[in-house]
Length: 86
Image (tube, rainbow, N blue to C red; front, side):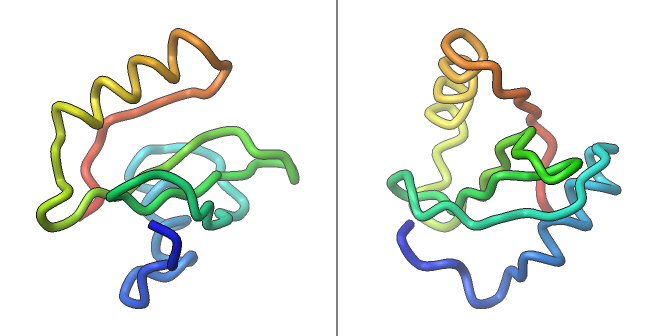
């Protein structure tokens, strides 16, 4: 999605990644990439370290999201996790 979701603030995403996933995240930055999901890079020590995504509505195809995460694991150094953002 090109536009950041109005009802999901960067602070909320950062707090969920920090507390829900147990990662030492300092900040998140929205990335207007992808088709059908909202995406952020999560930073630690001023560097992007992780990728966080949120699937919603009719685009919430979790099987496709898992395939994308598997591809990220295989072809990049990005750490991927699969907990839900409630």
